Length: 270
Image (cartoon, rainbow, N blue to C red; front, side):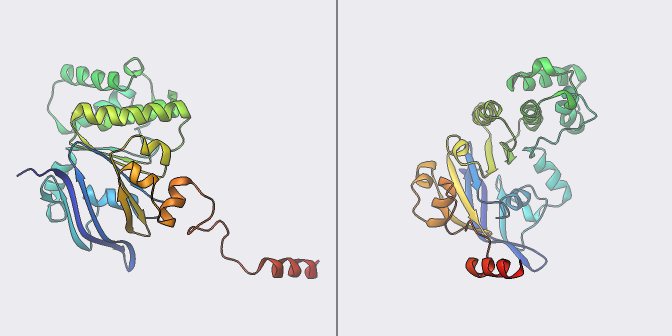
């Protein structure tokens, strides 16, 4: 029976060997919404995507997608679930030896038995949705960074997924391309009736895009709420991140000896 939440993560712990990565994670991602998972590099954001996609299993707790426990699915069940997911990798990750058209057609050919004439129409529709129907014959090496990211987005929505996951979708983009990708994420999510998860540390672009935010630090959710809630957060760690402050709980200076002592040592050695 379908619930209001497409994804429910309950009391999840995950570790590489004995090194804890995620601790006590609880999340609920409603159907039809765009939700951000934010935090500094190394905080465990991408690991959450891997758990949702069934790439890894939690050491403790449950990951439920569309009412099914991901950590209890066999390999065939994982593959069936992934066919209903789209993924936009950082920097796009296009197949370099395939044309734009064939990159988008890849999943259709791999996971369906549709005739080529139908695949052609569907590919052109997806490329039209991201503004690149006229580029279907180009190779990835002929694309700008922003164009490559849009082709990757067309590929991610090729099979009309229920869930689209974005891993740092804004990294390395110029302001125009960044704005285009941000608007496409929102527009395509709403047009497809999908649910989207955006893993990112780009604050301003993300807060203008999403419905809800989870802030992760050291493998724990330390804050969550609407974009307005996050902008107004008083927790020092969240406030520093959201406002891009140089110093705070995350210090500007790497731990070191007394500065004056270091200078005296340099003078003595000279």
